[in-house]
Length: 370
Figure 1 (tube, helix red, strand yellow):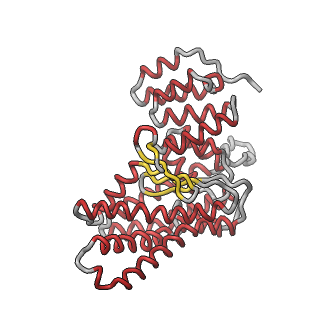
Figure 2 (cartoon, rainbow, N blue to C red):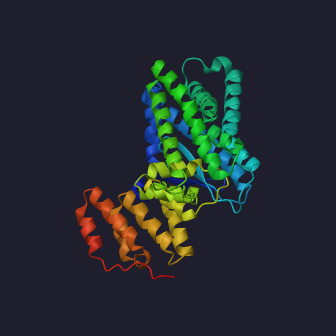
Figure 3 (spheres, rainbow, N blue to C red):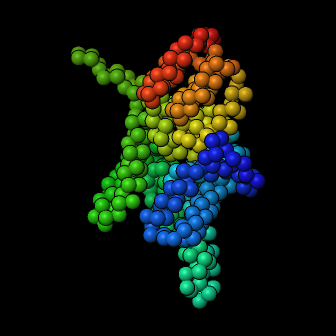
């Protein structure tokens, strides 16, 4: 049974016990990819969108089923250019378990693609003439097998990049940084080959992946102050944790970068559920994101970190009514004043001085020191 999500932007469904959010942006972009792939005619385009959706769901279910064996409660979101399976394991996972979860998606896709290919061989001549079944099975073989193989390329945030990271030496943060470096090294020749072959769509994806990995390198770089003249080099300060790096990207106004970094973290990295919710809301997955934020606000009443993430997510998503409701409701007294200043800045950047003025007029004092 499905129910419309806030704003009518998608559907929320339950599938094998997993909550699934299908955003309108996913449907539109799948349609655009089909059109760019020479899928023509309304009927063929609808078949393409349905088959692509099922194929990506099969892929994400592979991740989700294996992740559930850890005791986590995975959720699947289909939005933008693809799918994302999010979950918080109850305890850190071994590298072997993390590797299994990363590879379960492509493995599911390849298995499904093999089954569809076998079906095409069995049906044989019955598929001639461009029938609906012929189109559906042809699209099915492509979206399962070809996309699964693409996902195995060792580039973050693809599954091959996630698996490659688990095989690198070092702790979780070091592996993520090294994986981003390897990813950029792989992307350079791939991008050159795509440009030479005039594959504009592929090149666009590769540029996006490159930007994502540059963001990961920036977010995970050690914070070391430069030594002054005539002084000994300062000792390295504590390295920013992956969770702090995700929140930092949100604070800098880069929700897309925060989502990419969150999705690229080693499987089993324990992060605050409220951070997951804030990233999802800020990037447009409001149904699942709002549910996670509401859950954490109810579980941790008065927590300034949760309050800060809620209002920052609404500001980045430009949901001004929700932001003002946050600040005037039960969350208001717990929002740090620095966060209030940040959302005022966001309102002004978005050319909404009226919102900024109303926020500044509120009698906000910030949370009491603990």
